[in-house]
Length: 159
Image (cartoon, rainbow, N blue to C red; front, side, top):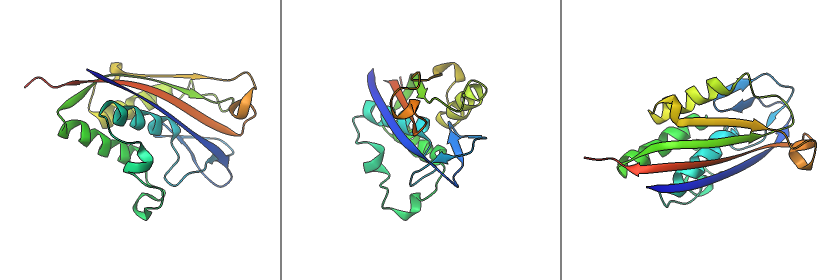
């Protein structure tokens, strides 16, 4: 068994959709990034890559590569899933948290978990997503950004 951790943060930006966990969340701003800036999926990808002993998503999917411009992070997650398969590993579980003052995430978490489980070809019970605020402290609390953290446990598939 191997474990990895991931973290990501993106600032808010005008004229962008807010995509978290592959869910288009109605909000006045989106997150700025080279891809769709899905902080949750980025943290999960980094956790999986870390468990595999690979570099972070910025190395695997560089932001100066135009083929990743505005790409869905779920497509990138599928590429990370392929690395799991190539290395003969499977997801044991993923635990993650979204850190945002606004918007509230509770109505979208089940869809996020379903999206991620679908891409990773695992049971939705293996994907856990929580959300929290920072009680108006720090950049997240001031509404400047959204952050996410994730841990992932993987295990070798038994042949």
